[in-house]
Length: 109
Image (tube, rainbow, N blue to C red):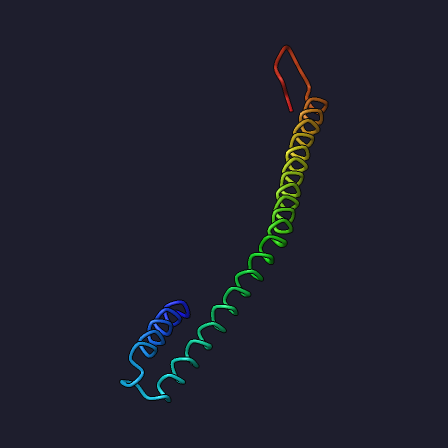
């Protein structure tokens, strides 16, 4: 909005310069004050954009590292769970095999 206001202020100041008799001095002062306010708005907006760009550039790397750590922890937990399940199934097979008795090729538990 500041850019639009600045364009209109410059246009109005040119009109004042061409036809000074049609406007009052107070109107020119008001337009000039509006131009200054628009310039301040543009400068502040540019500063905020630069600050946000730097913030996201710095913290994007940190967020990516954090997400990578969380992903790797999840994968490690998944592998631990799979290993535990696999080891339990091997232990159960070993226990079941030792508790079983075979009589004439028939398994009795």
